[in-house]
Amino acid sequence: MNKIRSLLALGALAAFIVLPALAAEDGKTLYDAKCALCHGKDGVAKSTAKGSANLNDPEYQKANDVAAIVKVTAEGKGKMPKYQDKLTADQIKLIAEYIKTMK
Image (cartoon, rainbow, N blue to C red; front, side):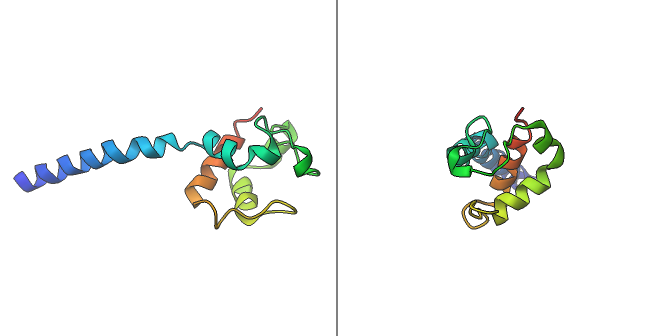
């Protein structure tokens, strides 16, 4: 019984330490750091992303689900480099989910 309590306490301590660090790395923070330079903080493509859709455009939002955005972000497209070797799958998904909130 004491071993179980010790394991539960250790698990709670680990969650207390690890979870805030994961929560701090959200999609907006990652987007601002990795994507905004070309795609703008508001999702409007900058001159460096000439030819790219505006990520906040209703037509773009309608045509692209999270999975489609993950695919392009991971694999790259046109001038956009692939990020699958630069970010984790979870980070890419957080970015894609954040992009879906742009309006």
